[in-house]
Image 1 (cartoon, rainbow, N blue to C red):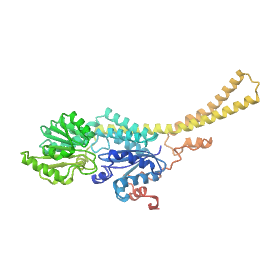
Image 2: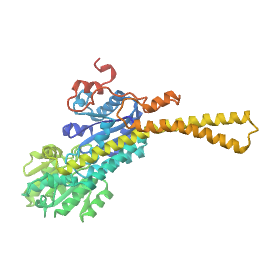
Image 3: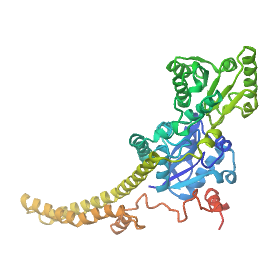
Image 4: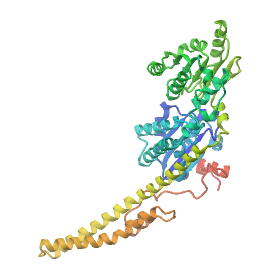
Length: 475
């Protein structure tokens, strides 16, 4: 297995950088095809959410793979490699597995334990499968990550550590109306959201986060829920689920003027809610006798709402940066610790299984070679001693095969055992070399001899070298 993960997230990059690197769902297939068309990359899966952009790839060269994926992210974001390098992390093999398992378990989310990431990882795998860029390595990895995420949620209470960014964002909105404020560990409980009861609500967008926002608003007692979306059938579906109504985006200013709380998460590349539109809506609210606070929660990446909206009187704007600032100091409780133990155990189990699976082709090739030799020798014996009757021939056949089986038993069992040992020697490759079985696919790959980049303590210049093309690396 030669797995590489390259990405950036809310932990390493500010929202403006994440906005530029974000990949809308409609663009994911193109990005995946571009990735596998690059040198050194055989498979690729892209996980792009509101607070992370990560590519998981099977590569045949470490530095070449890092350079190719770094260039891909650079072109997507419009940032130079030098500008992007401080925000990128690189994980290789075991650390890539551990990182993805932590992501799927909700341990690396902006709000620890949030439930949306598992669906996003599932969608990432589905898109890569449909695009044809997911192969054996990435399929196995993503499927394992989904199992780990489900297990962490089933066996621990990590979901209680924070349901989603939706709950935290709406907690901000509730506080604007005199609610109890935001309790991160409550994850947007109904007590925390009590300030939304009786408030008119507008949801812009009809994706999974928008649907969750609409459902949460309805449970909190919000009224007259309106869903504004570019695709009518999607908007109507979300609105119908909460007893609300759908309007086209062209009517955005009208429904803004009638709303108390707005949640926007469209996945659009440009601004959806402009400052002048909000300013006119606020003026219409005042004229219509609806003065008071207008709370807007922007959960999109790139941002849907013009940041200048925050300067308008009577308007409170919450975005991902504010959500991140709130949860940055969140303490890990016992459920988080239990989930981390699950992840650690699952990482070791996955790597052990991978190591055992990696020697299977060698064992098969060795036994196939032995069968070829046995069959050749038996045929030669038959030619030399044609007078042997069938009973004797069968006895000779069985005797030869027993001898070969006994000779091969110990090395085939031992090579499987040694594959799980933390040793630098590839005994599968030794067998291939001794018995002239041909090259092994996995061990022909180069491995890094430097400390894992993208982790604390790594020289930033060394990180830059990894992302830079060969001609620009330091000697």
